[in-house]
Image 1 (cartoon, rainbow, N blue to C red):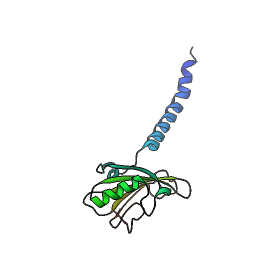
Image 2 (tube, rainbow, N blue to C red):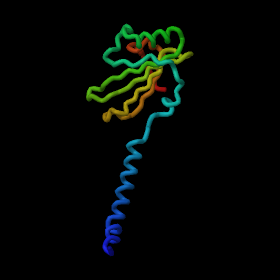
Image 3 (cartoon, one colour):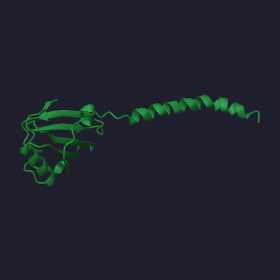
Image 4 (cartoon, rainbow, N blue to C red):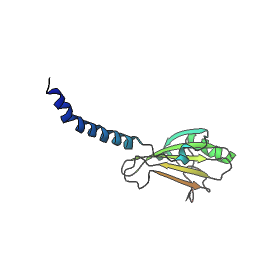
Length: 140
């Protein structure tokens, strides 16, 4: 019985240190780096989600048609486009027709692309006429 206390002393500090490292690792891994500009964006009617390969010069899917109709009517809508990089990383783009603003605003979620230099991108495309016709876009 007298030897059992030695085990706690022998393993106690390394165990506490290991748990501390694990806790910090889980905190960093689980951190949400989503920008406030995205999380605080105004909610708009959703048009659905499409695969990037399905986007055409002429809106072919109901989701694309929904976004273009909202743009033409001066209303709001959001279309989610899921694509892949050349390396196979998933990129999610949010195309938003915002009432009172010309064209589209675009948020790019690149958090799953380990080759990207930034996790999130934002740009405005005032001359956009649809998902496949963004025109010249500029940052924020």
